[in-house]
Image: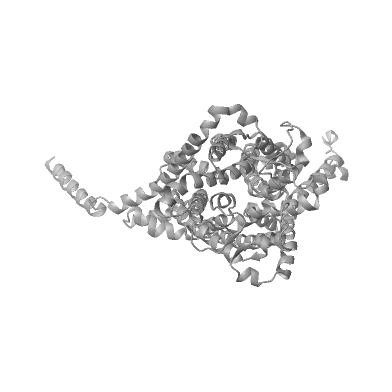
Length: 313
Length: 316
């Protein structure tokens, strides 16, 4: 009986360690992947370094009266009135949000609360196509359609104005508002809606008094992200707002104007040909740093609100 | 018999009365208007799209009927009726090459690290926050990065204001998009698949290469194509990396790599320049160039959406 002993194979320590070649491959691959992931941190560091170096030179050497109280953005004459750019940026953002806020939210509520699945499937691509349209195309659209047939119909604006640029930026932001809002609305548990209906509430009552308040953090996030996007949009303003690098202080949105981004774009066009005042080149970096900080704060804020929705449900 | 019918009639009346009380027989006017408004906001988006396409096509079609070949093979000119987009198509093509060569491998490798290798601790969370913030940085700020690092610091390699500087800058710009979409695709791979492979003794890399990546590939490709479309339509960083808006000498062929260290132009750049130009004829060639770019971008987006839909239905 016992002479038919079934000896288990003797395992050596090396058997547990595995094939040295596989172990080596594993280590190399892990190092490579870690390196790839580290590149994104290097990029962030490079962005901050690029901006900070020249922006620091500007901040420490500039005559601050030319930045805060002069009247216009004439970087090549040493006049860097940042208010001019801030006012332009504010107008574009306000007009854009007046367009994208209601339309994007409305589209999101319809897709999330009203549309049947098959309707949703046919309507959603409209927003996806809109999201895929490059901003230079919207810039062209602003000049060839929005300005002549919308803005000039109601105001005495010229072909190039802050208002038509703002409307185009708004159109560009609709898909962003819609998709983030829709995500927020869909993450509201259906139990809340059913509780509303159970109390005899109509659809509109349930949507406006139950679903929207429950999703409010996500809706705020959508709004903030769109504001950040509108502030950072360059090409539409570059094309449609009609400024050419210099801009007198201007508060009317029906006049040509300059935003933070467009100021950088127009200035960059000539950085290799035009030698201006000592700090002309550095002002580009200064504006870039202001823009970077502004959008970073907004994005972090939006992130907070999005996370609040996720924690709630 | 009589009794049951009486109950039936009484029951019906009761049901109707309760139903009327509950549902309020008047039509819900405000609800209807509200719904109409919501549908209207989708309608506005659709209308804008329709007008945009109609306007671009009617404005630009003439260029193609008159001189399609000359327009597609011609160079930048200061006169609208002689200008062509060949150099712009060439620049855009090479930018696409840079995006595929740099963003795709680095993006997928980062995504695999984040989802499969990292220990999900503080470092992973930091990487995650960092990538999402990078995705929100305005494109013109990436232009500053390109100007400082590639145009100035590394001018020995890139040739300064060159196609190479611009291509790498745009590859960096879309890298976060590739990482985020690839990470989502990798996250969607069923855990059972990994466990089965580990169970038969595969190492982490063998699991990743043999099981995770093949399963996640459609999602990864979708993300890369969307990123590519985004890069092709992007213009702002190119302005800072030395894109030419006036005249561009040199007539290298589409594939000639010697142009990588030279000045360049690209489709969105010429569109922006022509759209800004109020003189007669420029709006037409801007629209024609938009048609060329939209055909490329929309074809890519369509491929991406189709791929995604196919793979979503296959999995469900």
